[in-house]
Length: 231
Image (cartoon, rainbow, N blue to C red; front, top):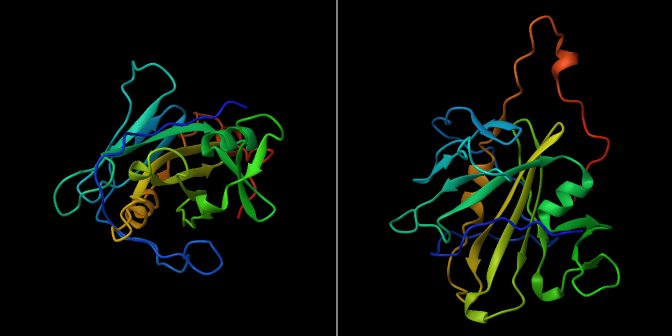
């Protein structure tokens, strides 16, 4: 299966996150509060609202852009609210096991995250211990989230990062993406994970209006036949 990797270049650095003893990130947070959300956004077949926060803003792809369509949440890289990356992409996929697994570049099996194998053999293998792959809990308004973080284990150690992967599942669609949230070489630096998660938890999917003369059952998306295993 071809891996799907969509993200933006790593540029700057910020915020921090603790991990509980079970390996999953703390889920005991209250739902974040924000003053207001942007107008309705459209990325491919996904329709949703998302708040502009921390000096950032979401921009939908141009209507005439070539697929795959990807919206971008732009974030500041300087100043008091600076982020590690100048933003992150969000793309829409069908909410099937295969498409979500491809978007996440991994899947959750038997209590642990597994990645694609790159050199033959089984299609999926457990992440290396050094990758510290861990589930990230997310609270959706009208969606189910599946997310995790992983640490780079190859390449220049000075440029290795902690990467956050996510999919927000609503009926037959999922809004997915990934972004670096911490430089691993700087142990004292904060992580962007908490703020990234807060931004994403402001997402609210918008169902298309029913056609005249059609019932809600005729126009609403039916749940997909399969969903990825939840941590």
